[in-house]
Image (cartoon, rainbow, N blue to C red):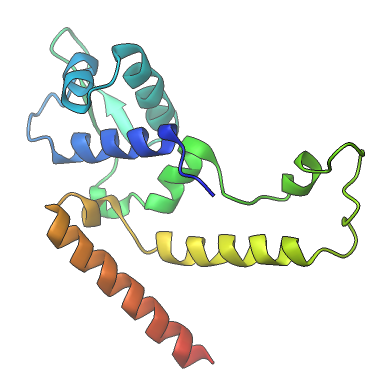
Length: 160
């Protein structure tokens, strides 16, 4: 399991835009310089984020990118899926069938159960994290995320 560069940099750009206090937002050159990315790559990532409805552009030569929704309404799970897709989806087995058309384990696969459980667990946590939780200094965000995790574990224990 790996977090892709597109997911990492796209999320960082979104946090940067959310933290911006300028009414015109941040331009591609500003985002490029702030994050150490090429303008071309920033343009690609902002296009994905804009098409997914997380950011909007402001017109003109002093225009830039702003959040399209309040930070509390932007769920990180949705952002990561827009940038890279889920870790596991139904097409996963077809993409990893080896040299055959169908996976030899397509009928009975305990590994598939593991991937589904991991995806479910990740979704449960990331559905609780919003962009608002991440636009703080690292120590504050870490405490917020730790509390979300602890509360999630407590919620699971109550269900059992």
